[in-house]
Image (cartoon, rainbow, N blue to C red; front, top):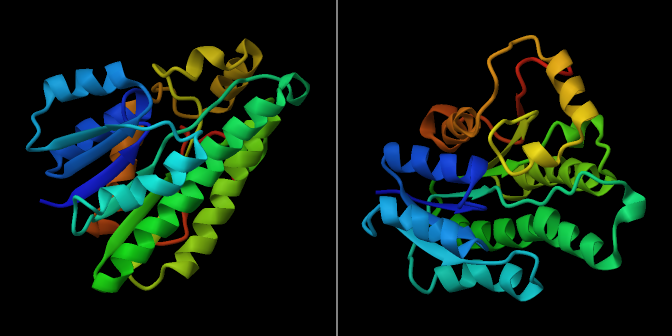
Length: 241
C-alpha cells in the first residue's frame, strides 16, 4: 500500500483528497492544526489506512521538523500533497505583521521545507515519487487579497523550479482551483469576487472539493507519470490562459 502525505487534511479540499486517496488504495498520513477535524476523520477510517498528526504549519519549528519526524516511523513515502493554506480575503493594508508572517509560513515556507525534505529522502530510492502543490487561480490572475495571491503565485514558481530540482525521480505538479464551493474559504471571499468567478465560468456545474481531489489523485498516480512542472486549472473554464 503506497503512503501519501496530505496537509490541511481535516476539511475542504484536504478532507476530500483524504477520502479519494483511501478509496484509491493509499495509506494516508493526514496533517492539520484542526484536532477535532482529524478526530472525525479517524473516526470514519481505521488506523490501517489513516494516520493523523496535529500540525500547525505557521510554526517554523513544525515546518522544519515535520518530515524528519515522519521518517522516524516510515521508511519510504510515495507522495506529498501540499494543501494547507490560509486565505483572509482582505486588503493588504489590513494585514498585521503577525498575519503576514503566518500566511507566508503556511502558504509558502511550509511547501519549501516539506517538499525538499520529502524529495531529499525519496530520491535516494531512485523510484517514481510525486508531489502535488495546491495553488489557486489567484496566483495566476491576481486576488483582492494581495498576500494570498502573492503566495499562490510563488507556489507556481516553486512547482516549476522543483520539477527541475527533484528530477528525474520526483514529479512536481500543481493544481490551480478557482471558486470551490463548500469550503471554509468560500464564505470568506468577498461577494463581488464570487459573482465575478461565477460570471467567468463557462461550465456551470459548481466545483466541489471532491472535484479538485479527483484531479489531485490523477496527478499523483502513474497515469500522469510523464507530467511534471505543470499547473492544472480546475476552474470550469474560467479565465482562459
